Image 1 (cartoon, rainbow, N blue to C red):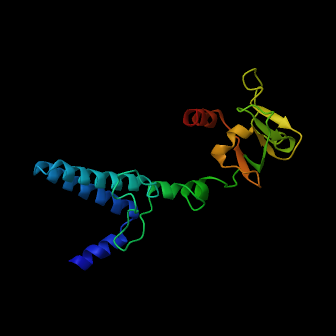
Image 2: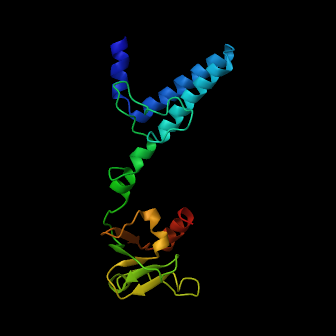
Length: 194
């Protein structure tokens, strides 16, 4: 029976395993509360449950002071760390960078980022070569006139103060600019990214 449980756990996805651990520790906490366990025991079970919930989302969180289980990562039965939701999304191997960013599709411009303190924080400096190839006709109004600034260079220009979310160090970092092609797509983008 024990070998069957280990085989089943080996086949489980890390997140499924972690959800099972959360359920198991939640049941243990409820059992301790129903049995009238002392407050320090309840506190230990509560901390263990919090540890597994936090590890489900990010298994690389730094420990909190007084947090008994924070010195180690949540692991599968063979000891390898759980691949949490956060670790599936970030880094070069993550879903965002691996599947969503950097894909060359139609109506996309990609070039190197250059810092420029003269550009406002809500502007993007776009090279002439890219601006001339934009296929969506935009009516220039007083609202959008300053949003894109055409630059006589071959790189995107951003204000230095807005580059930290991109983790840009200006050693060849690239930026993609997507150009929505229909009113419906533009409305969807405005809804998703206000």
